[in-house]
Image 1 (cartoon, rainbow, N blue to C red):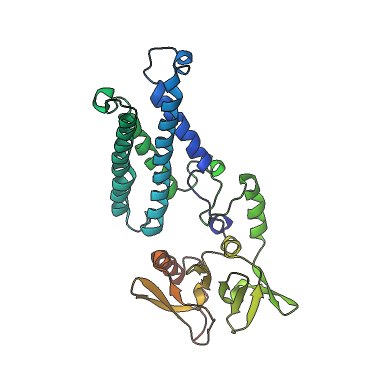
Image 2 (spheres, one colour):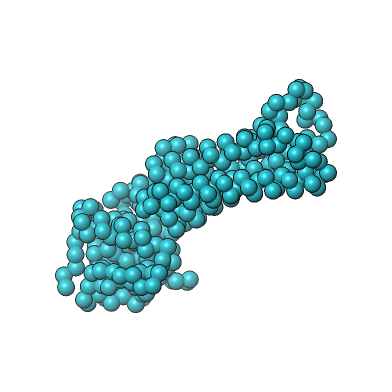
Length: 306
């Protein structure tokens, strides 16, 4: 069981890093090319107004790029359609944001009665914005296709994809803890039961409680949250099919597309009280990982007898 695969890391940058980048870019855009000494420039009254505006625009662009990338990761992952993803990344993450930047700057100049055409913005500042977006898009691509390449991002990232914050210094302790886990703790009344992974058919999380459904159709209560389960369970053997349900691959006989979603068919005798629908944003990933499981790519392909 590979702990690195079971503990998802956000390969991208934390909001604090994006704020730092925006501040650095804003200062660079303002100060680069200045004839006067920096100390004189920062003493001018309009410096801080320009700095606040430049920082706001830079932060807006970086935040927009971040969320555009996360959305595209969810809807069109690089590994499924790299050419289409590249085109969309360029259109949405570069071209669209550059047009928005131009209109925001024009609005700023209009607000303060400056002439945009005479400002030289398109010749001086705008190329720097283009480079910022292109470099950041490249970094996002690099981390998406080769996670951990920029090792610095592990320390600058504060959230995993599920949104749970954890300190980077706690990661090693968490990995060591998970490595030892091959079972979950279930409750049946006042009785505590240790349930091995290979006995589990399905897990369902609700707002106040959760359920473990076994392959023999036994049911146990559990105290785990969905984020806990995603960190503990082996992704080569289990898959989160929707917001609140996880299925073991070895109880799935086949699947089919139902409109834009997926629908599971389980082996005979496996009847957990949980939806068998795979949400549409997870279906492509499910098909890819399930095909690996069926091909024996996980090395643990134990199929339930029919």
